[in-house]
Length: 226
Ligand code: C5P
Image (cartoon, rainbow, N blue to C red; front, side, top):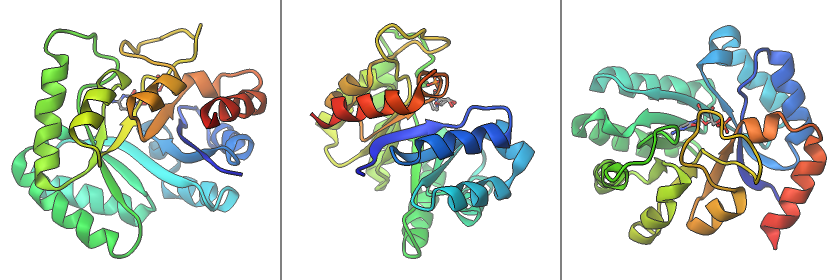
């Protein structure tokens, strides 16, 4: 079965809950996103357990690193060594760090697939007249360094896709019609976000709290494949 470009956020309390979600979604989703909440409790073993259950799933460590150059570089290297396929760094981390991360991504990609995703403006931030400008300033500095992975809200996806046709654009802030936004502000439906140019959708609450997950994913799959 063809997987959907969905990164399922494992925003859950326990490893058992996370593995149960992996079990029921692995035929559909491309990657699992692990944040500090689960990783600080279960560590690298969680990645091994997910890989055992779902060998073809990619692992996305979402720690949003933001530190001095040497610390950021070594944190990203550790994420790679822990088994991550994707890792997040704040796009405003600074040019010196971006240059080092470009070299690191090139080096690590010789071994296997690995992409650093640079977080621009959180999808939980209220939109303002400055939002797109700030996102573009951050994206420009990442792109001109040679790096191609960006995280933004779906609201900026079309403009970024138009400007940088070859970026890998990951968009959280995904909600289906009628879903509660929760703390997210700049949200869009899965179909519209993909049409706007997202490469992959981060889905947390809309997916993990769904009462009939497999049915939901089957219908989403039919919708997105049209
Ligand atoms: O539940 P919901 O779909 O809003 O979850 C979104 C997920 O994406 C959360 O795990 C959050 O940490 C993450 N995320 C985000 N905005 C970013 C980067 C990551 O919401 N810019």
